[in-house]
Image 1 (cartoon, helix red, strand yellow):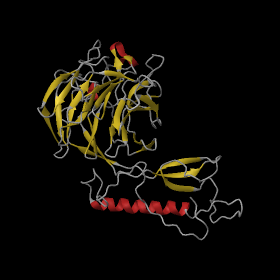
Image 2 (cartoon, helix red, strand yellow):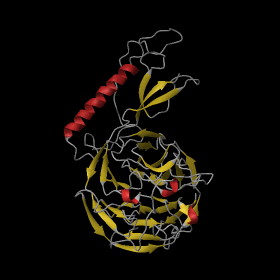
Image 3 (cartoon, one colour):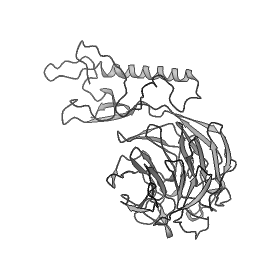
Image 4 (cartoon, helix red, strand yellow):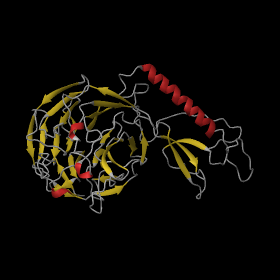
Length: 444
């Protein structure tokens, strides 16, 4: 993308393919930042403009060596330090020959975003789910476990506008480590999980649905496979329950689908995931859904280092799976949400310490661009946590509760103290919806 000698080049940032620019919204502050002072946005804009100018100086002031003239107008021309800026990460057509190699230096907005504290929940809890419900932007924080290891049936309603919690109709029975998702009509579905913290407790096959219009829970059709530490996702009128551990803690790759448009919906088996996963995270984006991370030890030895960094994509139209770009960090029991623009934000989660011990919480946050199949690091969580609940409403990403660093007796430490380290705190992540602009260079 070099300029010809003597040629002036104007740089104009426009909406690229798949961007979220909409007619009539030009100049409006992005969603999720309505509470930030306008002058911060001005400073950010100035900073980005300066960066663009710097990159433009590297990019368009460079003329690559021409085999015919051997001319150059910049000492970096044709070297590994030749850097340019472009939308996406693919090499532009006609830029270099078939043997040329290029690499991305990262997104210009890597590390962006910020975290703020919000009102705490009335009490600490972990291993629950958070799902938007109804049509007024409220969030249900469902079930879980308290700091005494008591499994809960209680459900909290959180109002992001008022930053306030209140009680809502409880689950039909206690449940934790289950999957949950929303329906197109504002209802909330939960499936699987465990009914108690007892060592011999078995995974459940029952489901329940919260009817937002009546503020009541109803039983739903049973899953074909009992499962816990599973996840759920919604694509169109179909909800999915997948992965997790089934009875006696055997991790599974099976996936079930429930078509809510049917008169009498029943769970039906669809294509298995490429590999079994427990403690996995899943969310939809567009007409597909994605499964990220989780835990799976192929040898069945429960090694602490068996957390995964994989990302699988499921296409309901073809009932098929594809393996996509791996995350920057392996993890399970974190938070995965879909942003307003259809990207996937992964936060925190559980990892291991030097391949010896698990239940190590993380700060790491990264954003996935489905269009470009690439992860970009974002501002880390101030407080490392795992087994928390997360969701997105109105462009703001909320995380609730979870657990801090803890130890377990079966790892050679003292009594399991994870529940005692449960949190009641709430945090919100705020960021601009940045365009997918990357710095690219010629590889050595």
